[in-house]
Length: 176
Image 1 (cartoon, helix red, strand yellow):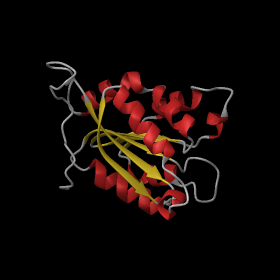
Image 2 (cartoon, helix red, strand yellow):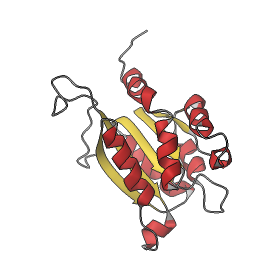
Image 3 (tube, one colour):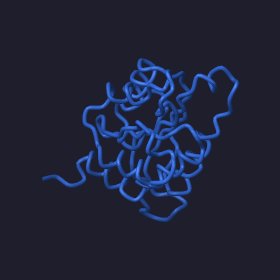
């Protein structure tokens, strides 16, 4: 795929010589955003938080809810990409909340520990209702987050500390 997405996980930049930055893509899954009846607040908040944590936002996508749209987008974005792909939206119990089903069809391997950590970050909150999953495709780590702004940021923060290592492992950073 030649969509202008930078396909590297390391760079030397304004953070300092040899500072490692990861590549990230944010995908908002929302019929309302596509229809123009909702703002993409959770996508904006995720992108801001990821940049604050040292990730480079290589692309943003907004897609409608549905198994096919999620699956096809994730497969397309993961092709030749090394980094994280974070979705926001479609992880609840609503009839159009099908992000986990589409993600599952795109994944090569699931990473239940990431999804569990994301759900447990707020044990007294609505995270317990999340059906979000996480896993890998190629050299991409794919993570589902809720569509609420606070929920999306809170859940990604629960795993930020391990994501660079996960991407490095996928890229062969620690051969066995």
